[in-house]
Every structure is written in structure tokens, then in C-alpha cells.
Image (tube, rainbow, N blue to C red):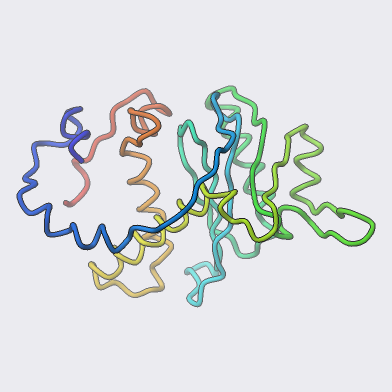
Length: 221
């Protein structure tokens, strides 16, 4: 928030009561052991993806999952709603076409877990790729899979999922809206996250994508 004020994106704010939320922040802290990981140094060098769901309450269009597509050098994080996990390959096709047209960049690596929607099946004879894995192979995109029961290897996506769901629950609770509106809260959260800076990149995702500073005048704070 302070960085947004310093960059003249938000007006001066009163942080007098910020200490009220210290206990809330402490309650969200987690203990983890982090080992060295290969990080991307170029745009779209590595895309992290994960699917969250199914949810007990479906969206208005009966979606019960969502998929996220993230970059370390964050240009624009994307979330899509899904009816079935098998739709993940269709989402990736749309994402690749959009990025190619907007930025003229080709995707190199996709990092995900070994769930069936990404990896396919594995038996005594080896891997039987699903539609997602076959698409990556056809496009010459390298697939990086995590080891079984090691979700921390896909920590970027897992942390983003947790952040999104924490913010969605907070938003719905504060507004007293019904749970069936979770998909609108989810899209709003991703919209806001793309308009604030990160530790990795000083500029906002919106600025990197559009070369314009974000405008918050239409938001109610």
C-alpha cells in the first residue's frame, strides 16, 4: 500500500490503525523449509499452473474449479473458471494465443503437479500422456512435473491459490454476500492483485502489460 502511495497511484492514506491487523497477519504465518529452485529470468520462460476445486457451491454457469496461470516475472496472472479439469488444455491454448498476439513471446516451460489433467496416467509400461501433455509435446513446450506428495515443488501456484482463497473468503465475509458469488470475488481478487506491485517486480502487472499506470478511482475503499 505504501509503495502505491509513493508511486502516486493511490492518494495519501492514514496508517494509524495498521497495528490492529498485526494479530491477523501473525495468524496467517506458516512454517516451511524452502530449498533452492530454478527461477525464470525471461518473460514466459516458466509458467506455473494449478487447478483448485471442486467447490461445494458451483458458480452461476455451473463451474466448480478454477485454474491459475502464473509467471515469476509477472506480466499478468490469469484465472479461468472450469466445469471439468479436462478443460485445462483449452485454457492453455487461449492463454498462449493471447500472449503471443499481445507480447509476441513464445512459452517455453510449464510447471505443474502430476495430477491426471496435466500428466496423464502412469502404469507399469510408463506414462500415458493426456491431452494437456500431448499439446505441450506437439508445441515443443517443456513440461516440468513435481514429484509425488511434494506440493512445495509447485509452491508458486500453491501459495497463489491460498492467497486467492483467503482474499475471496475475506471479501465475501466482509460484504455479507452469499457463497454462490465466489467466482465474482475470485475474479475481483485477481484483478486487484494484477494492479499492485510485488517483491519480484517493482511495477504492477498492469503497467508491464499495458505500459500505463493503474487507476483505482473506480474502486470503493
